[in-house]
Image (cartoon, rainbow, N blue to C red):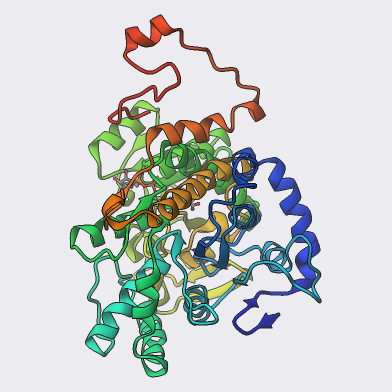
Length: 497
Ligand code: NAI
């Protein structure tokens, strides 16, 4: 269903189903609900116009409705072509008090299974607001909304759409061509569209590791247009969502996609950062033998001490039944690896972008045949070797190499996302409050910031009661002995958790 400029989703008829799920999710998101209780009366986000680009799931619906409860106006798109839960998108458009015939909620432009062209159109829709007034804040996941503003402005300045010029641009040629087409069209409609949009934006809060990398690149090269808050590196984000979220949603994605038994099999996990740690633990929990690969000696040593074999992909490629990439890097599983895998090996990525697995290379293998088993599950049949070394066999690729926990399942569960999204809301509050200050009193410049530890601890605190956790009180004497305030923060900045 579509109302131009107002929403574009699969079907508003799904709204009721979405609303039930949102209601249950609210119960599991105590951090967001506590922020609604704390700020619902004062509405500190009144006047904020937030463009959100983040997987349009049930949990995100609770985030969106928290932002509006705090007074913000919001427009939303997903940050991945496969990650939208259509019923959540519909429920957000209809809103808690509307009906499919009379939608009263938030404009959403997202559905599961967008083309790349549709994806970038949707991203543009959240930045181009009716009436000419644009967003004054971005809430991003992976940095595509932020990237579009930076590219748009840059292209307007030179009056054309030149090839890759910005650090952090996706290096897939096809996708950049899609972005360029959007910008070329914009230049024809209004040669100053992006100048107008960029001028109004006072900051961005960024959800994930990969988006944060892009922001630091932009800040280092002096090209970052507005202040950015790195939500990912709040401890209550990356040490929870990236790890415990993945521990839940990776097996969920694999099970829904394949229903192949994990126990007793061999699972290969590329990368042992936060996401890799959650992935390896999930496979071990299911009884798999896990092999990890790393480039970083510290993470490799951690994996070894956690009891995992650490090896190079090429050395174990014929052994594993599952291959999961978690690196946020490119070209990790390449064609030569896929050609050497076992028959019916399952291959998936859980890092942010789809360049970890060389899908283009796989498509280019002479004689390869792709069979859709069901949406987001494809069997790729690889021909036999000419010299007879290898018989014809196939591998199963999930979500076309895009993040499988959101493509094949519904992403992380609510409770862990409540931590991440409480950081997002606090980040938006910080930036919006700062925008109201006179320029000389602003705390945030065109740099990337993390939230103060006291707010990180606050997010954790908001989730303790729900789990029946009782904190031990620090006595005044103990606090003095440790040199920390009784009420926290309890750790120095350099502490690593
Ligand atoms: P991280 O930086 O903690 O971990 C990545 C690890 O991969 C690092 O230890 C790095 O040394 C390693 N690595 C890099 N290149 C490698 C290679 N060629 N071979 C083996 N290891 C390699 O990052 P984090 O937080 O674990 O995030 C990883 C990716 O997952 C990012 O793209 C992030 O945006 C994404 N992410 C996805 C989520 C999801 O729901 N699917 C949730 C959170 C993050």
